[in-house]
Each structure stands twice: as C-alpha cells, then as structure tokens.
Amino acid sequence: MSLSREMEETRQKAERLLKTLKPDRSRLDPRLPPGLIDGLAADSGLLLDKAAGAGTAKTERKSATQDQTKVAGSIVELVMAMRSTLKRHKLDGTILSRAGVGKKVSVAVVKSVVEAADDLIRTCGLYPDQVRGAGVLPADVERLCALRAQLITVDVAQEGAKVTAKEMIAARNAAHKRVKAAIASIVGVAELAFVGDPERIAAYQAHLPTRSTTRKAPAPRA
Image (cartoon, rainbow, N blue to C red; front, side, top):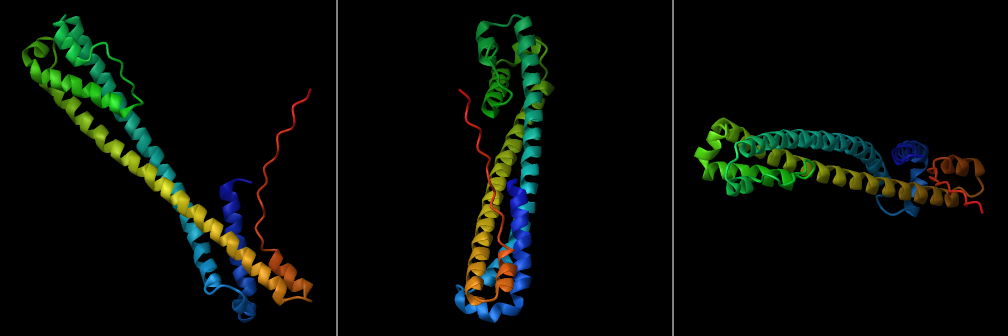
C-alpha cells in the first residue's frame, strides 16, 4: 500500500472511530489523556489538509524546476553564441579567456550558468569596442543581464518550493503518526471499558489502521 493511500485510509478510520465513540465518550474520556479525542478530531482534519498541501507543494516545486531549466537553457544558448562570434572574429586570447571561451558550462548547475554569464558581461564591459567589432550588440549584453537576473529569481523560488514541500511532507507525516497513536489508545481503552461485550469491542477494533507490509525479496537460488 502506498503511503498516501495508507494515510487516507487512516484518516477515514479516524473519522469513523469518532462517530463510533460519540455515545461512549463519557466512559472513555476518564481512561484517556486529556484532550486526546479532540486532538484526534483536529489531526484527522489536519491530515486531509496537509496531504492536499503536500501535493500542491510538490507540483509547485516541479513547476519552479521547469522554469529554472528553461531560463538556464536560454542563458547557455546565448552565452555559446556570443563566445562563438568572439572566437570566430579571432579576438585577442586574453579577451577570449576572460569571456570564458573553452570553459565548460553545465545547464543543470545554476552556479555554472551564472558564472558563464558573469564572465561575458564583465568582458563586454572591459572591451566594448572589441566585442562590438565582433558583432556583439549592447542589446545582447542587456538580454544576458536580464536572463541572469531572471535565473537568480527563479532559483530562489525553486529553493523555496523545495523547503515548502519538505515542511508540508514532514507536517503530514507527523499528523499521520499522531492519528495512528490516538486510534490505538482509544481502541485499547475501549477493549478494557467494554470487557464482556465482544460486539462493542469488535466495533472499535474495526477502526484500527491496516499495517503496511513490505514484501521480502526472494532469496537468491544457488
């Protein structure tokens, strides 16, 4: 059973348990820690909210990553074109070196892309006449600067989405753990409170969450 499916099953059983214990609350409350039943009701609703929130955060993180990849790709494409024209116009080796010609750029690494853009932006500022003679326009440099700024913004958003998703998942897991513990406690005291009433006990036991099992891999054959 997947974790998300297990959580949904646990939530549903918690809600059904809350309905089952309603007429018996006065008998169960004295046996339970203060606020446990109300806490279960709150966590049951929270579990639903957190599960939905975790899914949304995951989608936002994926979208932010896609945006980051797109902007980084545009920068690398422009950087390579600018490097190429500088090289084809046989500019001085010092200028080519400062511009990063021959230096590898990884589109998947933001730092690498930003550094490649910075090398070119800096070089164009130091040698405006030479790069202009190689066909690089001020508009090309402006576009590179704009894309660089956009990448930094998107990268911050992507990192923020990662943190949000991580926090939402942690909160969801914590709520799930509390709900399972509360259900176990309530069923446990019900078994004691209704000794001699097997049908009532069975009604409570039916709300115990199903344990997820992991299949063991078969032993390798000789």
